[in-house]
Image (cartoon, rainbow, N blue to C red; front, side, top):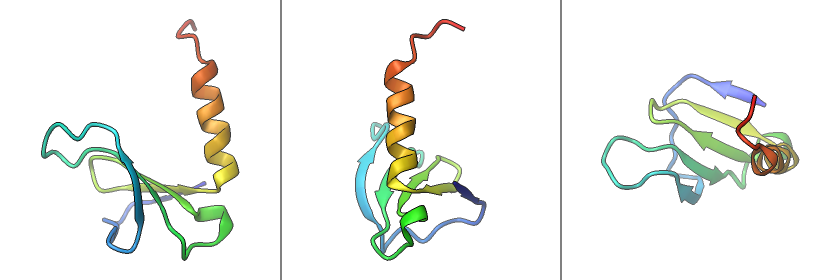
Length: 73
């Protein structure tokens, strides 16, 4: 997983979902970058213009962990 602190050019990415979408604040988004290497294909952006890139396997693991989270620490 890598963090890219520069404002990303998102025009070449395939959008999957926007996590808020009810405002104009630059909501976090999920994209697929078909031109990226396998280990950087999934792109998550935050509302500050930064992004994290990861493999589909890493993203699947993240989703699995989030679903299993019961909110008790």
